Length: 347
Image 1 (tube, rainbow, N blue to C red):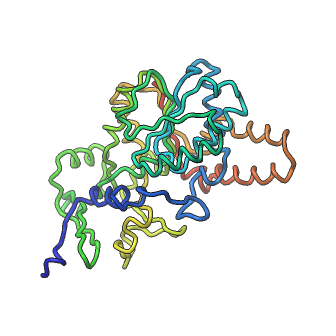
Image 2 (image 1 turned 90 degrees about the vertical axis):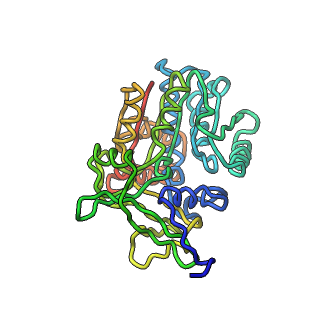
């Protein structure tokens, strides 16, 4: 074999990280989301998604569970659209809060930080100032409202599979000049074996880094509300959900004849989140006030219907109908409304 064709074997988690966060990784540079991008999110579907979260913040302050000078922290804000929507609806509902609230973003890439600052300045001028953190471990606050939309599906994961001899195997990737080939070998990682045994996972993804991430939040922020939306469920699928999104097409990672090298770092790669694991990470930090719901139920509880009624009273019929149609997409039980789940944690 020629030197240039030497096989480089690496754990799937390392390959996943390199795909998304390497020097030329998918998320290391700004990417469009929505019609012009590779996929849609709830944020790109309707501003009322962020508006509902904004209403939740206003209501929490009114109830006294959040302080008027709390810091709203978004983790992985991409362009800044979601945080802008949250801020805009807070202003609509209680404009004086913008005089006391603080805003921050956790974003590792400087290019994206620049994009976020530019966009939020275009929206709000100098009224809103953003503090940036490169890592969640840097965020140390007395109180905060933390928003993390679709981030856990972008944490690195291992792929595991129980073979016919009932032996747990884990995935490696042969990344060479010819192909990016996934192979399975007997798992020797005792922590991974114990995790799969605990949660009765025989096949699928095991998200890594959840524990450390949640420990950082729990240890460094004395009082908080934490909200995350993502696709997944509370029961393990015991099947592979890892898939690639490109130009609004979806390719399961084990689809026959799929050329991983073709899509490596140029398309999004993701998987379903196992929420029971996430919930247990918070419980291990002595946090018990945890709510798990479908996106539909969560947004209704946050007041999205009330916001739509406010719009109806203050705009023309065509605008109201257009926005109500977008909101319907967010809430549809057969679509985003049930496919996406919300975890709401209070400390």
